Length: 450
Length: 78
Image 1 (tube, rainbow over the protein chains, first blue to last red):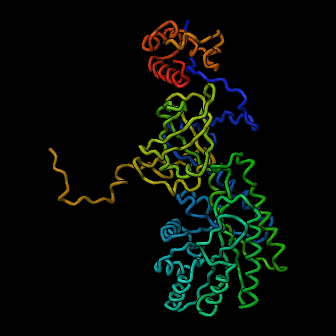
Image 2 (image 1 turned 60 degrees about the vertical axis):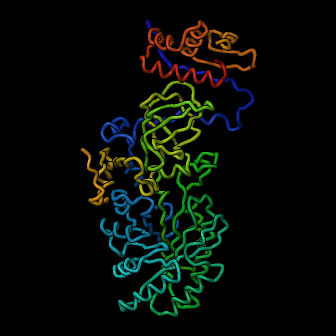
Image 3 (image 1 turned 45 degrees about the vertical axis):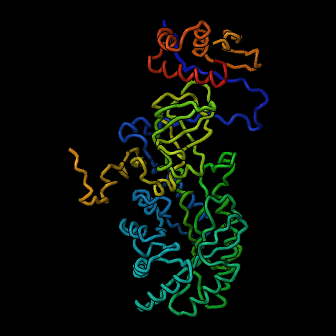
């Protein structure tokens, strides 16, 4: 009778090194995503595999929308395309009532192709080519101006079309946080924003009707948003009083955090990341206390990450394990930083498909790229993992499927688990044809090999 | 394997190195491998014997024994 097997391990007994937070290891298991077993997903669609949950996405949107709409009567959400512009993801959020917030002609075309009318697109960003700007104007998009040159461009277009154009301007300002994003829009404190408004008014071709700002990314300080709203409302009334304008909307942008763990922050996101209610309260309370009675300009939010990040998972498979010279255990998995761009700034939650016996030890998880930078996760407490073990990384719904790149390996499939448990491919895995379709080999370089 | 012979190893898998003063813990399979090493068995012999004692296939045995020896080397026990 043979004895049951467990992977042989030896561990040095350490005394006096316990940390005051206690052990950070709890076994994290994720045998399924919204009722669909991980093993089914992998056997049908392969590994690695991005999986999005429609239920989580819709629920998160509705939660956040409710937080704002119950506190302020005129709230509007616009989906930040750059955060995730997969058609299926955008379509879900458009169904929920979001318009499209785009920052390039490519994103604009993608939104239009999906069926979003121009009048339901917000066009932001520092680079709007004339042709794209003209199309956006003709189709009634809302344009937030980034710099003086864009004012001149829009005036030219207004003249050419013989119409005046409603526009907003993007502001940047000091809200007490660092780094302060000053490269976008017009600075408020220096008087640049007022100069821009004066210029727009004196030109007589554009109608200034909105103010936009976007403070930064993954901001953990609700008071920064309160400060921004305070400054925007003051500035809006200054413009209305001096130039007889009506500021119809205040667009606070995005930058809200998800429940992800930023590198360098030890505490878990449940503790370190303020709940979204805190942001809603800071923004809406400030609005209601600063606005004149019966004045409720439209509040626009362009939140991307906070809505989609937690709806996304990445299933990976352990391909190999290796002990490093310093004794650290490392694993090679089949997904690298080329498809998991946010690995550079987050420590993801790493979950096992099933419980694996054995003591946990701190491990490094490497991707499959033959590149030294391909580190997907560090210092993850994991039991000894057999080859073929599935690891599930989350939250990965924001930015990865837009910032990923085809590099060394093909990009994997992306699937969506529907609310009734059905699974649809929303982006097929790449093949060689996807990579070489745009390449041209001059005839004289064609290899003649027998 | 001289270093191994000086180690005090009890039946529960607690190991004491009287020279360095370090203590270690190991599991049942680890303990079995250590005993075989003390008996003077080579890694190849241990790999081939392991599936006869435990519910494990030859390939996993080879991979895990190799990794265990690396751990011992890291702790300067062999």
